[in-house]
Image (spheres, one colour):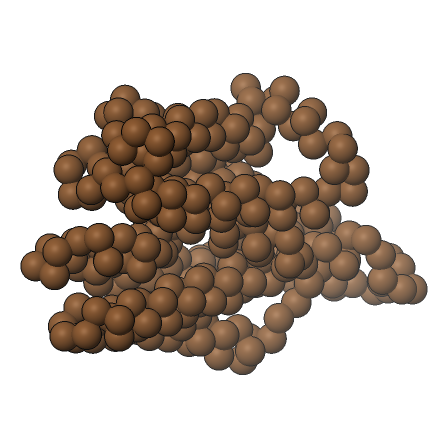
Length: 314
């Protein structure tokens, strides 16, 4: 599949934003975060900006963005529609929580609970958009949605460590500790996804697609088109196996190893300013690694329609 930049930004920014929203709400519900209005303004402000920016980026992939509202009407059958409904509904408790936190220095637990649930449901719907697509076997895997949830939580925790660290006592830097635990788990799940989808048996072949497989090996005699077309540009994108392996290593190093090391050092450094600087670098690396992972997620996917354009298996 063609890795459109708007979708890469959407899934990365919105996923990180919803992960951060979940972490903040859980921290408030458990009494682990102070209800300082300044913290509310900075943390919730950053959360809502990231979520809004991500959702706006998703419109960049639409040919007619002004018709995006129609997607909300298919929530009974479409995970894309469910994602849109969940995203909009989550804004209500998240926005009210921000108002109470900033204006009154309070965090009503019903709003925090609803916002946390909304964040999880929205990311789950995002993952299910891709997991439900049987014509793309690499996406149609039971680990696809867990990968989205785990990476959202891990990057959200790194952002939470950056935004809330200055308000926490040095003896209780729980976002740093939680991020150190979540990062390896999230990327281990992603690595398992890579391994299992690579090793999976072909879902379809050119023989089964044409119904001619029983006659022997089927091959394309002549291309259906003399040039490229929209379907090939969007669904026939190819990335070399050598380049994919290199990008996987880059994604793991940027998304997991670098943030983990920086957070570990920040956890024990005696200088608060240096700790904030290291955590900022960790957050930037985590987001960059997730962007590379998202690019590969789309670039490595093969649609079954490519069987009619020369692919032997999908």
